[in-house]
View (cartoon, rainbow, N blue to C red):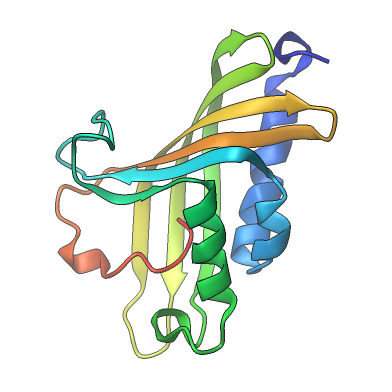
Length: 163
């Protein structure tokens, strides 16, 4: 199967399943959706199109750092997420923007509500940009880039969960 065989509906189902895993804190299962060379990035809001090699990013993880992040988040001693935040993700406007061999470029708008004890509701809004790879196990995430819409992040608090 190649990228040309994948429909928007297939991609939507994949993104909805990913959102459910993250909202349910099934992070070890979420890791299985990633390629061995996956990257997860959140650029600064003032330079969303920048490159992590020469700009400051909120998060710029390669596969090793993603796994370490999940390990920390699963640890009951991880104070940043103990108790765990409750999140609810809304995914919309899913578009396949490019097809190249076994890879799809995908864009989707998101809204993530974060509930945390003793904290006000936080609402994260923006756009996901994915590079999805077609594998023998189905779609896998090679790149997950989170473009946040707010110009000022101070009111959102720390991003200590997988956005």
